[in-house]
Image (tube, rainbow, N blue to C red):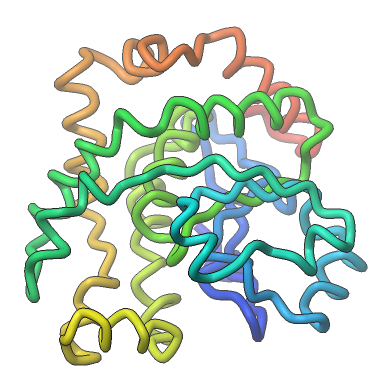
Length: 255
């Protein structure tokens, strides 16, 4: 897996290309088509111009809740410059109650939260796959506030549907640790509001491969297979196949 997938902007964090990940059929996801990110609500004019001039992405699926939008704002500059912004909230507050009450949440706590959040993924994941399948939404980016938990789950399920091996899915998830800790100051209001130290908050930004591996294992155990899980979410084989075919147009190697 290439280490150059990260895209550094001065006004956004944890943005990276999901392209170049190898599939089970030894093909590769095409670069420049599907991205994951933290919030893009504060993207400045310089970064907005660069995004638009390079045509980095056309569509932005925003997983933040109305409360987060009220607190941090909409991506007004991106919208004003023609980016198609779709607000599809994943309200994970109920799932994260256990973690928000603790100063030092354990990896197992995050695993439990991720499993609970599975009930929230149907609409955003299906919409993402539909836009990929249609092709008109590409290139596309999706993200929440930090781009780690909700974004991580959607990314993992998307990559699983696209036949990316688990080891690469977990490795991609783990990249958030470095991306977020290098931008720790972005989260100062969060740790001050919680009354914890920067070091304690940095622990919350750790994305351990074992956590994502445990989540995927739980999905398979609960539903028997990933296909059964996708069927239960209303995401059927035909849609997934069409999405693969759409992406395959951008690469010489099949998905």
